[in-house]
Image (cartoon, rainbow, N blue to C red; front, side, top):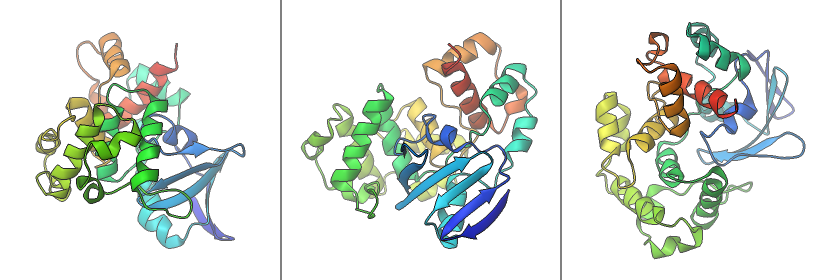
Length: 271
């Protein structure tokens, strides 16, 4: 991959294993929208971005070198060698999945945003998840000038379930408040979780009401960058039952989360 700075834009050329649309619209993140020109617009880590892909060229519009280095390079996991990881997968089904949907990367989202977003996602559908999160950000986030930031745990910790009524989040409202308070008051320490062994990190997240096994695994994968996480929903459960009844293939050990994302997308759109 080559990087250049042209007319205020960051231009990535000769990219490999990077499909912007697949990354932003495969169930990892819920705040990106594509316009009629094929450009994706969203806010992450308090920064707004417009990004577009044309073949192997990706343009990040109105982005500084500093923001690219400190935010977007990490967000899109551009320093990880996905080509080497995909090539290491010897399982036949997984090889087909990677071939049919190349370019999925694990987004490195804000840890708190990932926790809260996947609490909202529980027993929910994508359009409704996006709507709740959009209303949450517009109501309690900060205006970046081109979208709203995700509200901090400190901001939400001072609210009540009644304050969240405009979100139409249903039973999830009490879980959002519980998560915000536990994190804001230090009962669940995000900085500590970053450095814990996987099972201990998961145990910390499970202290939050509304965080079960799947939500914890999703938060660890998409927020904390723990690519060994393996979230299991109805689709992944089917995949495991159909293809791996005797256990996951050895070739994915250590990168289970990346393999899961390919298998999930492939299985979901195969029918």
